Length: 212
Image (cartoon, rainbow, N blue to C red; front, side, top):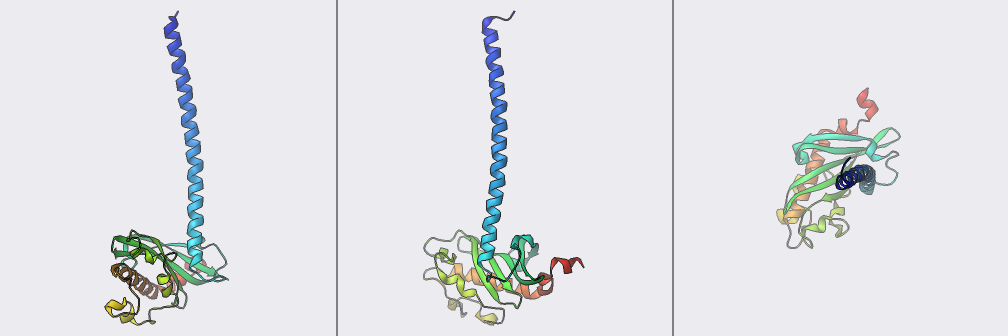
């Protein structure tokens, strides 16, 4: 027979063990459910960001359903960058490239660059940055309309010398007290257009044509 104290300790240990198992199981289930919701929320946010920079009616399927993985110095990263085709009636109407401006004032600036099949920009949006609030953060379209000025531009409009801020002899405005940030963005967008021009056929090919 176990002493009363030993029986009590054993009982408490068993209860603690059962409680621990239940707790761990509950946390695991909660974490799994939360992770699934986070993934779904992130996908929805990405979809909204992509839809923001393309004209309504220019595609008839979810943009995230046509992903590409691209690697090229012109896209500002040694790692593969995601890109998306906008497809309408079986034809690619535009491509959205993710590119990195590596020389921002406070580090890398992540951009989405949407290019229509004719080579003109459908839009540009800033995804991530660490630029100075009140100065460099004007690259966010909700804080300043500057980045909307890329819409309709192309590799030929303006010509190569025009793809710079006005301080450098180009056609794009800089911000008062912050030239480095817009300079980096202009350069990155121009390089994205150059990448598109060099790889136009493969970027505009549909998945079915690529498999054929």
